[in-house]
Image (spheres, rainbow, N blue to C red):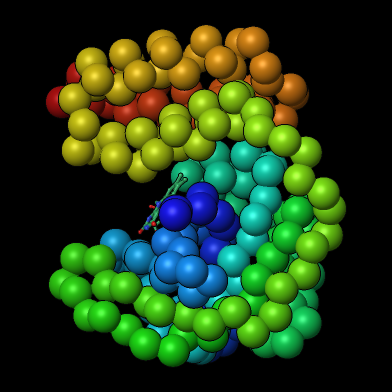
Length: 188
Ligand SMILES: Cc1cc2nc3c(=O)[nH]c(=O)nc-3n(C[C@H](O)[C@H](O)[C@H](O)COP(=O)(O)O)c2cc1C
């Protein structure tokens, strides 16, 4: 099972980093899989801890990929770390084992503390559409633009039917970033 989350980490000087990460869960053990190079990876190697935030605010996912990383946080409870203010729940985790890999190491963690902040409000197709579009943006240099456009056209059906203002704002950020990349790529 892979859960799309926001991982918050600090470097050794206490500088915050937020990144969307698909966490693999084997039973109840989270495995974080950052592609090298990664600030999340270096921070976890420096501090040995991270916070996994389960948030339905898709603006944070879209924002992290479009240069909007300034999101409100508060202190974690059992580790030196930060928790997103706008998260439904969070887990504070400790690194216990690394499977090294030159492309994508596996960081096996143990959950040492978990907190629920707000109820899960049900699935929403527009949130799914934003997450998928954010993943397409994160892979834009590897995928043909025609494939990206076809997928966006399909995702927009669910977006148009079910989005609230949060999802529309996040979608706009992603569409602007894709349009800017595409314009830049056609100039080359
Ligand atoms: C929903 C979603 C899931 C993602 N999952 C991962 C992941 O598991 N590993 C990864 O390296 N990047 C993942 N990314 C891309 C990273 O968030 C993004 O490239 C990040 O800025 C790179 O990592 P860093 O911030 O730690 O340097 C994901 C992006 C999205 C939108």
